[in-house]
Image (cartoon, rainbow, N blue to C red; front, side):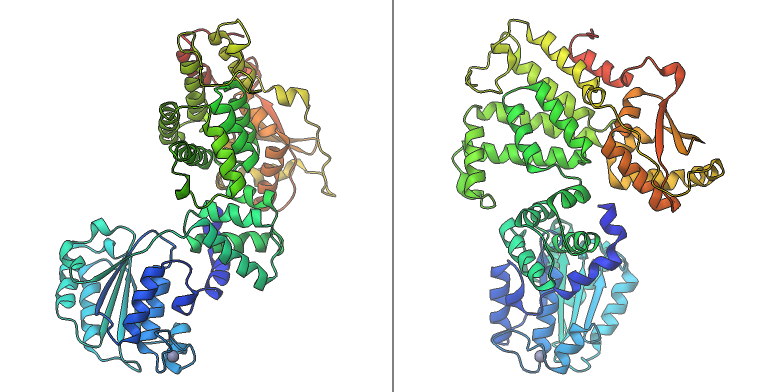
Length: 539
Ligand SMILES: [Zn+2]
């Protein structure tokens, strides 16, 4: 999420504003909250805690609330009052009795020695000095040893709260000195509930679908979910549409995912490839697309195995859809499809174009199960999406080749010829502006990369050539790349990014190098496809 990281300064606002100030206000982690409330209530606060669990689920938030409750002058039922001077100082990050250390940037022995010196001094205003060490697994071995000595004999006024996402990296000697709490991911339902509360209070307009998309994407990290909501709201002027949030997150809309799953399960490779292509054209991030597919297939497998009660994040209708999808496929076949896609996922990062491994996986799955030897007995012939092997006499091998050829010939762009848009700037683009664009070309590429990984794969090998008749001419080696960028949505996205970087609208026109003109697709795609289908390619 490059986009989000760049906006972090702005993003912190909503997250900070909505950071819970009491245990009960924290979403989830009920067992942790109950135990800590009881500890504060009965005055039995430990001197060392270890909070483990995924990022963004509330470890440091609860640590801060515990620090506040321990030092509160008037705690109520184990909760900080949030009114006394000690509470206020902590809420405003002004307390000298709350020391937060980032283990990632203070990982050496010197930092821990300094901490040990600090521990000796009594608290300024409160009863306890609280040391929160976040990402504690990053400490060096020597630093851990130094810390261990302090944990073995802590002064009565000190509380250590160690937080980590990687508990296996913490020495057992340190773990044994701490009271340990395991934090869990926040469920989609819980995240949606929190986001609903925030949008209501902040007057942000967003349908529930948007909140569900954000919640699913943030994968249990409420902090990320709130940051995404904040970013989307500030871009959209407090109104967030489904399309917009899918766009900034680079995720495919649910309809595409459902159709894609349907076509994968019915082994309709042609349709599957079309769906993948259509998702990518809409700016879907390939890694996320594969993740979503794998997760959805896994859930279908769970439904198939009769364990649907563990899938708490789906609505009744969604569960029914999963059940329907699970009926015509065996668990073995599902497993194999998931494995193939998982393998493809590993290769996505290193491939150009990066969706190639996914397409090859789909073709391999289709090929394996539609060869004459293994008919698809599990698939009902009445289904509209049933593979053509059952209705056509042509051997599937040829069928698959046609599907592949059609897929890569970009029929869609031929049918809907791209209309050149008029330059909306008052002043047409002048040739003298070319050096500005050329100088900023790397920034433009980085901008496109942050926007969409599959787009950058096509744009990176291209070159800005000149300005002609008010258009920036970009030259491509391969027709495939050119057509990808020329697609209306992609072209607009690239033009938007250029505008942001050079400060004016620059209409682009894509051309292919003349001598390469005859090439239809990248050689690597055909080579790989030819490997699968025994070395011949049908034109
Ligand atoms: Zn208080």
